[in-house]
Image (cartoon, rainbow, N blue to C red; front, side):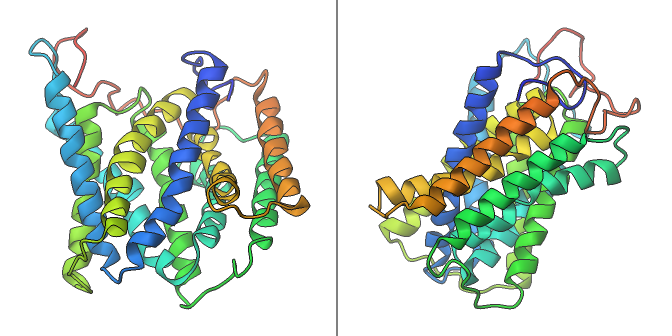
Length: 333
């Protein structure tokens, strides 16, 4: 997206930002069927959340330690505590509800519910103290994108299958956690997240999964099948460590609502995955849904041109932008 929603200048060219959005859409689009494959073995979804993001935390911590230099200032304890709380909501609460809900439906239904994240991000931004409104054209673009996602979902045979009455509320709760967490990230991490901070966020998410596991033990046994192990490794390393690294770069560049548009791309990834990998037929309705989503993204981009006012809440003066109280000019890990 060519203009930030929080009034700052865009970091880097528009093409680079759109490429990041596209890359995240691919990573997270594949995540839905991968999560569905993981929980299909009957293992507790809470155990999977604890494992997936525990592994992601370990990987990011290793990267932080390997790339940090003695001359660099490490984030303060207060900063890392904030990161843990953000991770508990944005990553832990979000994925906990997603992992539980996707057991009782398809990845396509989950992707459709999560397509409400851009609109929920608008509501969350206003509810959490946003000082400006989003334009009518931008709202039209967001609504149009949701319609395109619904068109895609209605073409999937058996796409509306639900086997538990709490499935949709759980998925909506996960989408809400994603939206609120994204807005809070833009507010409290306007310059992005440090590597150690991201490791702490994954740690907070893993603790959420472990805590839920203590309350609802479920099936603790892991079947060491290639499919299950592949699901765990993909979610932890690809959609987790790599995906959230891209996600935080996007929030730094574009703000909460623009970053949330990635949820419009995930059903497209599912459609293309089915067409090119599973040899599924793509008909005119699917093409129409794809066209609607792409038109919505273009309309949203057009709605931002010439607008420099914030759509997301700014960082309060009482919250320091620096992740550490160390010497000025040193970069955090």
